[in-house]
Length: 130
Image (cartoon, rainbow, N blue to C red):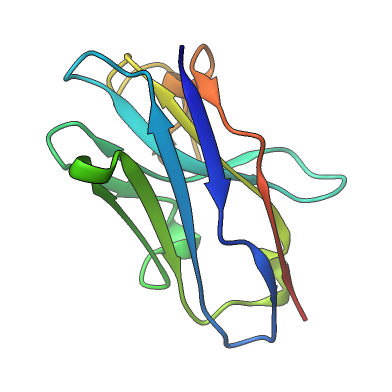
């Protein structure tokens, strides 16, 4: 049974930091892609960052240098460290996982996101920046 559970969201002031976590369970194959997306009210969902099973990371240009994706395989946990947060970062943040390689499917704004179309998703965690 595949399950993804996010945590770590909250309310912060502009310039602050948050670290999101996503515990991933049920992925039995070594080769997979996991990553973070967000969706603000009235906007389309957008991919932020992903990390392949070999550790290769990719980022949306607008979050490069502010957001860092990482994973702890021993804890089956994916992280998103977010620094210098801006009000426009306010959104629901989701993690996703798939057995499809990260560099597959379609791209949006230069980031591979198609891998998650048929993947598994968490319930989301809210981030509010004021």
